[in-house]
Amino acid sequence: MSARGRSALDSGTRQMLWRFAPMIYGPTLLFGLGEGALLPLLPVVAASLGADVPQAAFIAAALVVARLVGNLPAGWLVARIGERYTMAIAGALALAGSLGVIFAPTLALLAVSVFGIGLCASAFGLARHAFMTTRVPLNYRARALSVLGGSFRLGMFAGPFVAAAMLAVWDDERAVAWFFAACLVALILLVLVGRDPEEELASAGLTPPRDAPVRIEDDIADDTGEATTGSIPTAERQGVFRTMWRYRGVLARLGLPAATLSALRQARVYLLPLWGLSLGLDAQTIALVVGITGALEFGLFYSSGQIMDRWGRLWAALPSMVLMGAAFLGLAFTHDLPAAFGWFIAVAVVVGIGNGLSSGILMTLGADVAPPADPAAFLGSWRTLTDAGGAAAPLLIAAITAASTLSAATAVIGVIGLLGAVGFAVTIPRYVPHPRPSGG
Image (cartoon, rainbow, N blue to C red; front, side):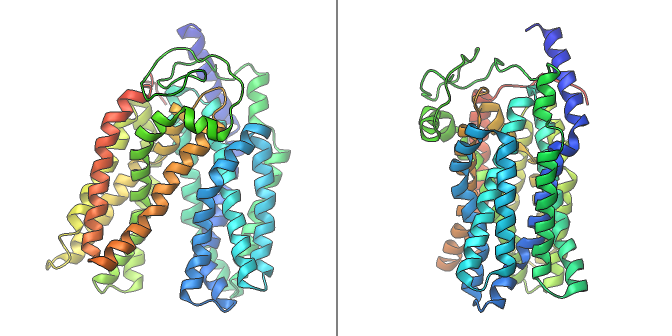
C-alpha cells in the first residue's frame, strides 16, 4: 500500500475510533469501575461469613490468581468466537459471579464466585486488547491503548470512592456488589446493542491492513528469537500452546523485562503501605500518600501514549523502569534517616510518575509483536507472562521480608527494576517496530 493510501487509512480509522469511543472504551471503564468498587470490600464480605484474616486474604487473592490462569483459555475463546461475543459472555458470567458474592452462604461459594469474576476479567481484558491490536494502526496504537489503560485506571481509581459513598448510604458491603452487577448489565447491553466498531470499520473499508511489517517471526516459520522484517503470509489459526511455542523467542526475550515491569507495578501496591506502616504512620496518612501516587499515575496515562507514538516505545519503557527501580533501591537506605517520612513521600511521587509514564506499555508491546492476522492466542501467552510477574512480586516481598528485612525486599525490587530496564534497552530495538511520527 502506498504511503498516501496508508495515511488516509490511518486517518479514517482514527476518526472511526473516536466516533465509537463509548463503544470501545465504555465497557472497560464500566468493568474497572465495578471491580474497583468491589475489590477493597472482598475481605469484608469474607469476614462477614466467618473468615479469619488468612482466609479473607485468600478470597481476595483468588481474583488475581484467576486473572493469571484465565489468559490462555481467554486467548483460545477470542480466537474462536471473536472479541464482541467474548466480552458479552464474560460480562454475563461475571454478573453471575457478582450475584454469587451477594448471596453466597459459605466461604467456598464466595471463593468460587470471586474466582469466576477473575476469569471473566481476564477474558474481557484480552478481548478488548485483541480488538485494538488488529484495528489500530501502528503510528497511534500506543495512544489508543494508553487511553484504554487509562479508562480502566479511572474505573479502578474512582471505584473505591463510589463504594465509600454507597456504604455511607446503605451500610451494607453487599450493596457494592449490586453496583458491580449494575455496571455489568450496562456493559452487556452496550456490547450487544450498541453499534459494533469492528463491523463499522469493515463496512467503511477502514480495517487496517494485516500485512504491516513487524519484527518477529511470521506465522509460518518457527520463532528462533531472531528479528525479521517483511510481510506476514496468511496462515491458518494456531492453538494457544502451539502459538506459545512458535513465538517462544520473543516471549522469552521481550516478555521477561515486561514481566519485571508488571512486578514493579504490583510491588508498589504492597511496598508503599508496608513502608508507611514500618515508619509508624497512621492509615489516613498512608492512604493519602498512596492516593497521590495513584493520581499521578492516572494523570500521565495519555502522555505515555504520546511519547511512545512520537519517539518510540523505549522512550516510555526505559525512563519508567529506571525511575521506579532507582526509587525503590534508594528507599531501601532511608528507613532510619531523620527525614525518612520526606523520603517516603518523594519516592511515592517518583514511583507514581514512573508508573504513569508506562501506562499502556505492556498492551502496546504485546500488540506490536503479536501476529497481526490472529493475535488472540499470542496475547493470551503474553498476558499470562506479564501477569505472572505481577503475581510473583508480593510473594517475593513476603519471602525476603520474612527471611531478612523490608529494606532488603525493597532493594531487591529496585534491582529487578533496573535489570528490567536493561532488558528493555536490549530487546525493544530488536523486536518492536518504530512508529512513524504523527500528530494528535
